[in-house]
Image 1: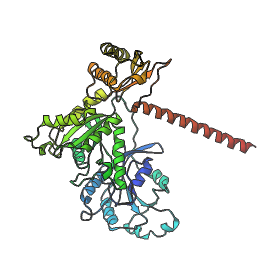
Image 2 (image 1 turned 180 degrees about the vertical axis):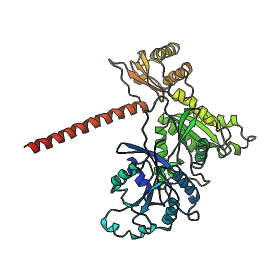
Image 3 (image 1 turned 180 degrees about the horizontal axis):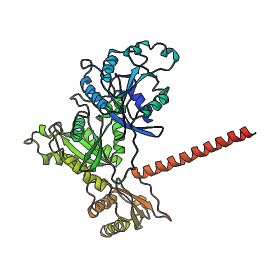
Image 4 (image 1 turned 135 degrees about the horizontal axis):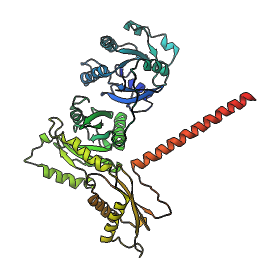
Length: 483
């Protein structure tokens, strides 16, 4: 396994800022308010061609001082047990705290290598006022500023020397992990479901709404296939969101829909289907990911008052735009039918990645047009010349016609239904675009696969431009030196 490095410390010492600095991304939420991070947050990091996994943990406090302190402490101790190297982060501005001493005592009992960092050090004057930290009995400290990057390179140089050797393996994209986002309103049971699917208490769970603030990734293997679960913060109505931190949490939840293959849309059946549940389903549909409705807390529903068929009928009526999305009634608390979720995800993902040859696509479209001809456009017949699949995830098709803008949305829906029936693709979204026939085939579909290709091309172009600029700079320096 890849070496694991865990960041530890009390709240608001800058662990998440350091985490983002090392992984060179803003994955972890950062705010001046203490206690933002509550769960373990994993990310891949690299320094000087050495790869490792970095873990951000919640702030360490005694159980009497914070509502979530006991659960955060459990998460922290698990991170200590799993890590190869530990990094104890201290606050150079606030000084030494009793919680720092308590955590230092815990770390002394482990035989693992511990690095001691004093964060928020931006001047030499601050370094002269750190005498209290040496009472911990530590030989040496690293003076750093995670916010400004001061001292981080020297620390990382020493860190990678202590990591066990590991060589990266080539990834197989075709059989790579299936990415799942668990989304829904606050307090519908997203974290409970994540823990149930993961097999242990991995994410902090509480009856208090808004417990999960950041998007937490969990890796699970089921029937030989890897799944990456992403537990997200609850998405409330825009009018009810006031705090800046909650806005960032919701944005990260929505971003998870862009990155996932399948979205599990959780609905609290004990409260019924709400307008916000349908709004969240609309976010998933708009982003083009596969979707499954998870009707949670089914053990609390009075079956005599409202049975499963009545509930599903109401769901289909309110979310007609996701008619292809399957629905499962479960109880994350008791585990009822949760074992069916991964099997259903595999079915959806199989169709989500489906590709079909061009000849078959043309036969389906040709037969559909023959049976139901499109309406005339300004007295002229709408003609279909050619059709092909241009992308997967989700399946995306392009039809080349003489008047693309003349295709009515009802006829487009008819063609999509024909593709669903004939291929068949009953569990995945389908994108269908119409282009005017020209000398060459072009594609302008707003699918994530196409966007990834464009981003890759852009990165390659930018890299080449940087290389050319660097070569020009070196040439100018040589010419200047020679002259």
